[in-house]
Image 1 (spheres, rainbow, N blue to C red):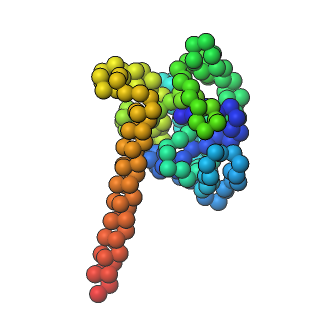
Image 2: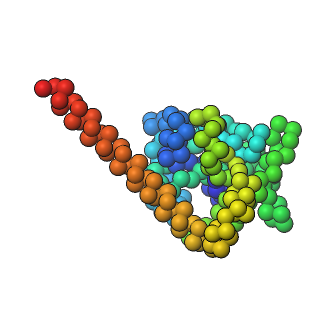
Image 3: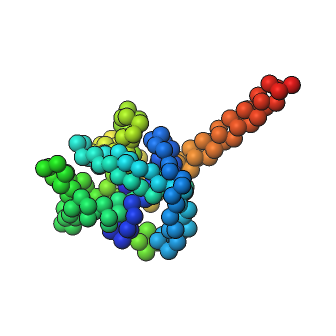
Length: 196
């Protein structure tokens, strides 16, 4: 998840919404020109999407859905204000008060093409065991354990890790596209034989 205090609307990529099995209302699209460093296309809106930010901290929000190759959820200024979030720059933590409890989410900072991003949540393998509508989950402890357990990751720079992760995700995306094409072709061929 990206926290972007400069972004007004909450945004999520279509690939995350599809993975969660949520319905996209394609009758409502938005003009997003000028809000990103790369062109993005609004494909619709997803309503009341369940997002787990920390254990016990689940929100239901509407998000603008965009086509973008990299999975991304933008926690915008609108949501930061709505949930009265506070960033502690000394400890690099985001505090979200919800239902009488303060939830603390560790964050990391990095620059991306003249835009500051705060990464504070990730999709994890634990998400596969959650309900379909609740697959975006905060798991910084899992990432910490992963880096502690894996010597290769300890020796790898952040940039190298990011490139390898992107390459892996891109390969997976390419495989998914190939599978979809094969299924379409299979259906086409199957339909031809059924008609004759």
